[in-house]
Length: 356
Image 1 (cartoon, one colour):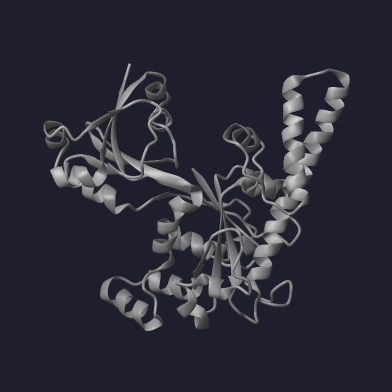
Image 2 (cartoon, rainbow, N blue to C red):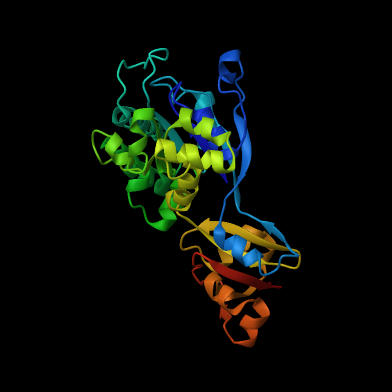
């Protein structure tokens, strides 16, 4: 899974990248001519995994993880640039860093600090990029269908015309409420306004009290996408501290926690994902799948062979497993359910897959 940090220049993308990943990348690296994005693998903290793993301390604990990518800033109106666009299309989720801090040494390109406006500009740019892509594909389909009939191409043209109409009306593709089959078909185009999107406002020190209520940093409460806030400069300093010293400075600034804790809590909801767990011979592991994923698809997240040879899933809720103390105790008590491949996996399920 690939999550990409992006946004306009000088918004704090690399600062947030360091906070989330624990990296120590030089914030001004891009000014020195560096163009390759920063990238780190980030395990996803999950207290449930910790508790389940504690039942079998001799086994390795493996958290679900994602690749976090930090792109260089993009100028206003340039999201459709081919190099930048390619990186965004590869992302499974987009994290837009929005400037909310004042700094006379870093003038805002628009001359005013208004996070709501930058969110609006970026959302429009993503939709415009999709509109250009959809129109280009439709133009090719029209030419091809004049030469020969093709039922599948006709279906694609009808679907893309619907998508283009929505975009022209200012609707993001993820808001078009497409049926599952059509939604999956459209996803193959890697449209940007179909991807999960989280806006993160890098706020001023004086706005730290609003970090827990980021909507108050906006001139309009509705953005259509979830919004979080962080204070990059202060948090970067606190992140260098340990133990009691860190606790003291958090309290001094009125922060309950650093932004990564909120980020990781919100992440599954933003992505539309849930977690399930497996306890194998050598490891206890967390996996992420889309919400409402059937057991067969969850098996495929582990290995395609398990999905192909799926026989059944042996399932128990994570909290029930903790209550009983072990898988063996759960079996002895008859607490493990047998489910078929169409069973919708629930967040926190512990699953053992039987397969041929």
